[in-house]
Structure formats: C-alpha cells, structure tokens
Image 1 (tube, chains in turn blue, red):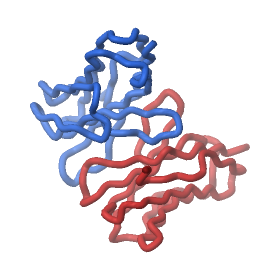
Image 2: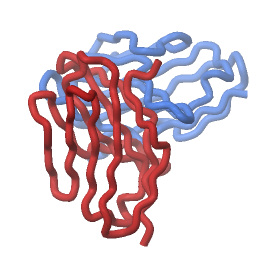
Image 3: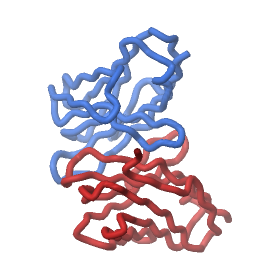
Image 4: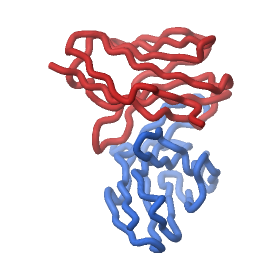
Length: 113
Length: 112
C-alpha cells in the first residue's frame, strides 16, 4: 500500500517547454487534487477531480491542464512552462462526501528557467 | 487577501513544554478545519480536525480549540517533543465541502 505517489520528484524545465506530472493513489479514493506551494504561502488548489473522467478548476488553474482517465491517476500538465510556475507541486486524494482527510504525496519540485 | 492566516512564521519551544500554534480566518462560511504537519521533503500529513459544531477536539497530545466568534483556532501540543519539529498548516473549508484553503504555515522547533 503505497498511498499517494508522484512522478517525477524533481524536474528542471526551460521556459516554453511542456511536461506532465503524474499522481497515483492506491486507496480507491474518489477525490484527487493538485496543489502548488510557494514560499510564504499556503498550499493553493490548482485543479481537482471528484471522480474518474471529471475535473474542475481550483483557485489558481491558469497555465495548467489536468486529466483523470483512470480513477487511480490524476495528471497535471504544463503546456508552456513559465518561470512563475516554479514551485513545489503536491497531489492529494480523499474519500468522497464525509471523508475530508486528504492524503498527500511527497511532492514534485519544479524549476522553470 | 488570505482567508486563512497563520501570523507566526516560526515558533521555538523547549521539550516538555506546551506548543501553541494559532490560526485566524476571515470567511464566516468556514465550518470545518484541519491541521496538517509537514516534514521537509515530504507531503503534509493529517493531524487533527474540528467542525464548527464543536469548540474543542482532543487526540492524545494534540488539542484543537475553535473560537467561532473570534474566527480563531489554535493547536496545543502537550508535552512537546523534538519529533514534533515540523511546519504546521491550518486549513479550512466551507459548507463542509471538500476544497480547503490553507494558511501559510508555522515552523515549530522543539528544542531538546
């Protein structure tokens, strides 16, 4: 039982490059989330999903896209990376209604030059 | 404007003493609150929660107090241990929803 895993752990991109961050969970959770954490700020919600095939925008969705083709996976894409997207990205998952505790992955550190 | 504030970026406490971490919120619709602990290079882990129908919730050494009129909650750790040294995040949701707003965190250092 691995919980929530994230791939990769660290990545360096040049401005304009694209990449996909992968999040996987083995707890059969319905809800999945992508956050970013920047210095001096709390985690901010980028996008989330309430079930397979669904996605919704969070607080800071611009510049990101997501997909939830399988229940256990939630992908975060950057089509054209910008230095402002340098951050630590956390994925989380939780049960549906009534299960509010979110379980987080270890994070992906992204540096955009 | 931050809806969830943790005004102390850092806190140092002696081992065995009480640690008190504070959190203030501005949105009166918030009705469910969580505390998370985060170690370096790891994701946050759930610590304790409280809903707005309660004013206190206790779990072992950890107690969370909620003062709705003041829009304030606090996390008490008694006694503090060196392993408690971490960043603590307060988070809140509205209408018992699934989406949480996080505070910026407080770094707790427990000195042996």
